[in-house]
Length: 329
Image (cartoon, rainbow, N blue to C red):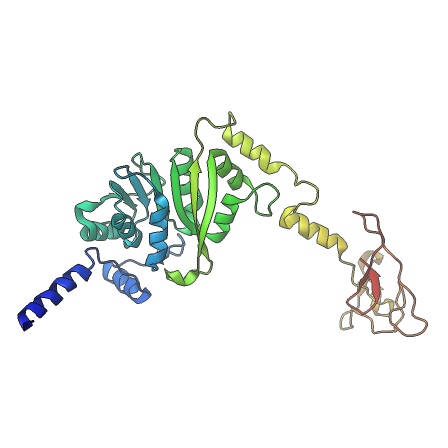
């Protein structure tokens, strides 16, 4: 084979391997592209840019719409998810981007292959679509998703903060079950998929993310007033044996914690005849020291403390006190 034919074949191979839609993938490439565009990621929006092309391809694969049906992407960014959708033949594709600099970047990269809509997804009217997909900023993910549910979009593919994803998919009795869970289930069904670690983004966020899919309910909603039903359902008390939330746990835990014993030798009358600890003296008695309530310690002659009864199950149970004395908990 001549040198000319070898050079031409390698040139054709390079043209095939060259990506027609160059998109930054590695973190250093993302930082360089943002610096070139003059874009600084907003901490207020919880804005991070996906750098893992396999995650983007997983999202694009979950869209699952017939060829020729419209799809809307929310938050195009630098185009890593847009490229995955284009490669899978999604068309027509409308990309919504609120930053004009990023919108111009998307137009320059994808040309007429996509329709770039510049505006805020919460205020800009979106075109009808069989599916909506997006890597949503953490700070506005919930209102954007609720707006798409209310539009009755048949399929919504999202990448959001792990906590939000768990709340969307939570069922009755779950620790994170609440108003968001109720609304999502009334509008359809939520299914969670792949977890995405923080290292897949630039800048690296402090929390993990997860891919999820919401499939809209067919027909009318099962309740006449969604907002009224969700408010009433969220106020219902938790069933017996289920979690009651952080406030309830804190209150219950507070009732179970014993008071710190203040020795009588370190107390003196305070204002109004109340007893208070004398400044500069220890508030916890030494082992074997007699106090106003009981004598603490494990040696001979140590008094057994009075037992307390559990209010919630009315049974006796002994617990170990931090001072080393068997106490009732």
